Image (cartoon, rainbow, N blue to C red; front, side, top):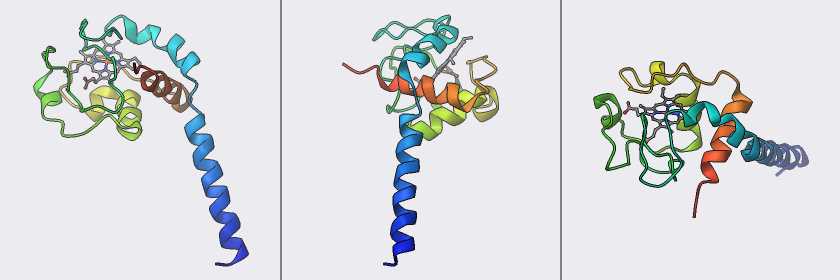
Length: 123
Ligand code: HEC
């Protein structure tokens, strides 16, 4: 492996780490006030939307006690960072027919912070 490739590889790892560390969960908690009108973070407590306790990382439409839309029930995916980021940017475009009548979070940094906050909701 050439030195240039080693350096490029190292930079790649650094960029990845920065991107991951880019989510500030404390800021995300404040941003979540927009979501809290519809979402509780308490396990099993659904509101207009499902409880988001441990939503990050789990199956989409995974709260058994919540009546999801048909569009949501048809989703065959996990809420990994990429899916959360896409959905939160434009919920009604990304999942046409969703009951989440919310315009979305325009700023990438805001979405990263929200995702970091959702990820922090673990026992
Ligand atoms: C106007 C109410 C409303 C607001 C505001 C809202 N949501 Fe939702 N959300 C919903 C509803 C309703 C669903 C269920 C969608 C369906 O069944 O189509 C949902 C679903 C979700 C899901 C998928 C959960 C699962 O179990 O698969 C996530 C994640 C989510 N919302 C995150 C957020 C975040 C983060 C915010 C704030 C930036 C937010 N929502 C704002 C109503 C809302």
